[in-house]
Amino acid sequence: MSSPYLTGHHAPNRFEADAPDLVVRGEPPADLAGVFHRNGAEPLYPPVDEPYHWFDGDGMVYAFFLENGKVSMRNRWVRTEKLKRELAAGRSLFGVFGNPATTDPSAAGTRSNTANTNIVLRGGRLLALMEGAPPVELDPAASTRSARSTSAASPPPRSRRTRRSTTPPARWSTSAT
Image 1 (cartoon, rainbow, N blue to C red):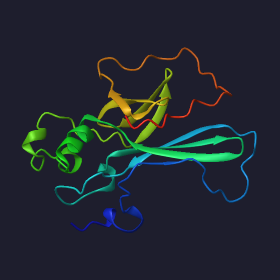
Image 2: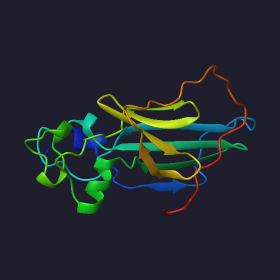
Image 3: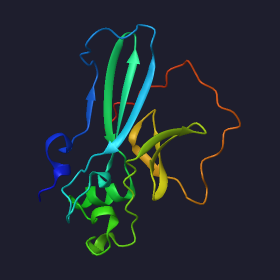
Image 4: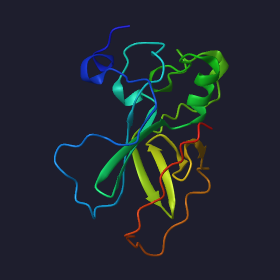
């Protein structure tokens, strides 16, 4: 299947990785500590129909950890119900943007949530977002493998005030579960 969104710099990586000590050009400030999360579209399996659009890829969260002048990175797919179904099947089941005409009948009734648009910390909870679906909660202390969907009927609790912490969040564990 040819698509400009599946080739060149858009070509999917299709792997999760832990990079404990990245090579950095220059020198990060020794007193800079924390984590930077980035979310984007990264299709695990080739699409079932065309035209594929890069907004439709599965959510992949990258976390860059800065500590003691060093940088490490971890990436994981957001374990949405869509992704779990596709992992079990070993192939893509959903049409582009959840198109029901090209979605496998075995996935009928499952929301095509890619959770690939943004990451927010709200009410102490790390959430992966997509505009057309409920957020997916990530566990930063473990990994995105223990993600769970939040209910649209029960949004995350609102914080009464925002406070910036100078304490860096705990690293994600290296557990494979």
